[in-house]
Length: 236
Image (tube, rainbow, N blue to C red; front, side, top):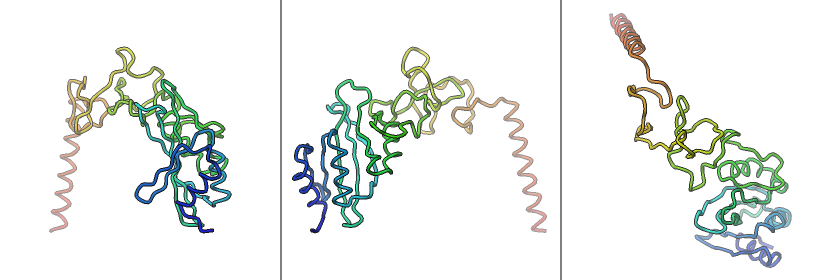
């Protein structure tokens, strides 16, 4: 039997008719949308019987106005048969804070870090995951940056923590302490509270004093003088 992406979809439909929400073919790519409760058994079948041994990636898509809100997306490849399919499952009821998806780490161990990334950035939890914790954001972070209701500009925290780049224990946007900040083209907050800002200053650092600027200017002048002197010596 020759296994292709199209024949894979047909086979799964015949073996697991109760698991299928819909199938999609677009630009010669095959997508199979599954009910979450059947995800693991279908994935096990795909690996064991149809030789889809390579899990390329796991990611998610946020549809804030849709119920279920999230698509969890799996790209899997059969190196044996040189074919590729996409699996999707939809989770997230209205006002559900952390929807749950079955983990596929028992089938493809490579799913471990992919699922941690989705947990971290989208807030989806994976049941039976061996070590479900944040992988990119700090452990104390309370929100999920790839959700579409996350502010594009981040959050402003007190100096020296610029742009919300440190953990916080209070949800941002609550009260007067945490305020959303806009950014200019060079990355600065439009509501900058410093009275004097050096154009060469790194965002999130304190403005340098006049004494520091004088010292830096003197140092630069000395360096240029030394360089010109060495250049004159070489030419002579």
